[in-house]
Image (tube, rainbow, N blue to C red; front, side, top):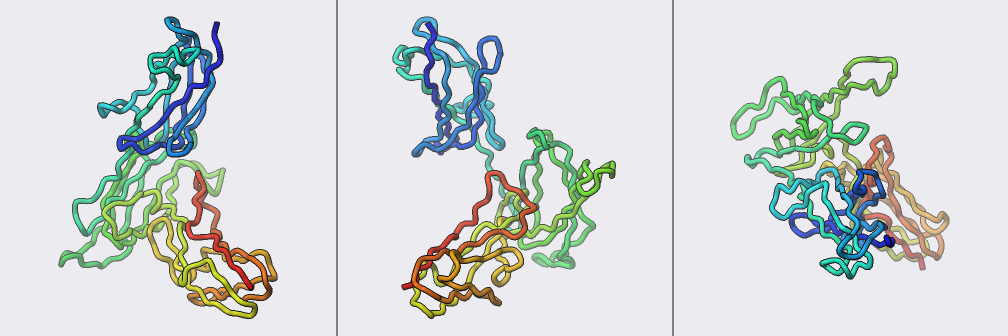
Length: 324
């Protein structure tokens, strides 16, 4: 008689690293959907567990498992990479299975960001999807140079621009000069600001290319605040009435180090109130101890127009402050 059993899928990439966020969907022998889950870290493993009916040997219950995650391939293209869909047998009790468990190891192939072969260039590449989550082919981008005239190794960098289009997988890549500035005119088939406007429109995005051999194109097009470090480093211990100046260094997800304290992009705050006051000046923050207690220095993005899933957490904050 069928008995509910816990079935676990362990996900790793081609290097053996755990893969979080893989969607697992299970279907019965008739093709009907049964259940689903998403892999998450449990200790050092990325596991998705589900409950399925099992039967003892020699008649286990068969299911079809499908795996998917953007940027991960389960096509069996490498010898040890798993395929999707994949047939599995569930036993009850699990000790009747050939492995003694209802556990399954699934290996995916992660996308490796390609690098430029010219030391002056950065290969910018990335994937794009439509609003239903499917690959977005045929997305047009017109790339225009904004730092001309420029000379690189004695050659003039001129021209009106180049066109870039995503392929059938929603993937696009382009080599651009490191530390260069470009405008991307991204063609959209939706009228973002005016629902009555029809036809394709192009919206501009300013791109600053980092001094690296490769970078995620999506991060360049849609940068957010990624990391803040402070000099001197925290946590901080102050005495009442003591004043401490700290200098933040703010880095965006496109690799840029923002000017001064980036006060137009970052909102700094100290809570709770009444223990430490915060002053935001030109190039530094000023902490003034008011009363004994514990407080926390935090920072958040001012511009929330770019939504990242999962949310991009600003590395380096919060920082604790103790006043004695």
